[in-house]
Image (cartoon, rainbow, N blue to C red; front, side):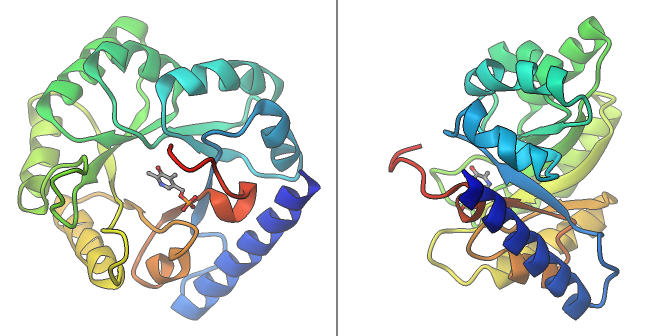
Length: 224
Ligand SMILES: *Cc1c(COP(=O)(O)O)cnc(C)c1O
């Protein structure tokens, strides 16, 4: 996995370059290294090389990897990037530092309840289905601002950001721009957008964090 460390350095350099071009200060954009499907042994050298923010898609898979790694490296920040079922809300609240996929009333209520029970509140982003794709999770763009407001007023949850995955194969730029606009309209500072193939475009359009998996860890098995 020395290769992953080399690739991490390249991605970090490309992020710095994009930050400079965008005119923001260097170090403004957070790299979330997406380690789904990769093992503890694959991940450890990337941590040793300095990465501290990681993303996983599945609660169960994350539970099998991260409690041990977090004991070893207590300053790790773990993000949930995949859909959350309400019966897994307690486990997600206990393990993750940021949940990026709050996307419906029922999940907001479950996170609020479990946060109270466990005395631990992860930072929260709302996932927006920015391309309004039927198969994709997320609140539709037209309801995003109102949903963030309801999370605050009804569920007493401090939403800090928005997250999106634009439609595959389309030019992502208008979608990134739309998400940044919705974040401004919702009064949140964090904008999570951009993956291995398009993170520079996301930075140019206002991303505060980018989620990069395969460009660091290599190709994943086909269906994840
Ligand atoms: C897998 C995944 C990523 C990383 O995708 P790559 O193309 O491998 O960089 C980012 N965000 C989410 C939500 C993902 O599921």
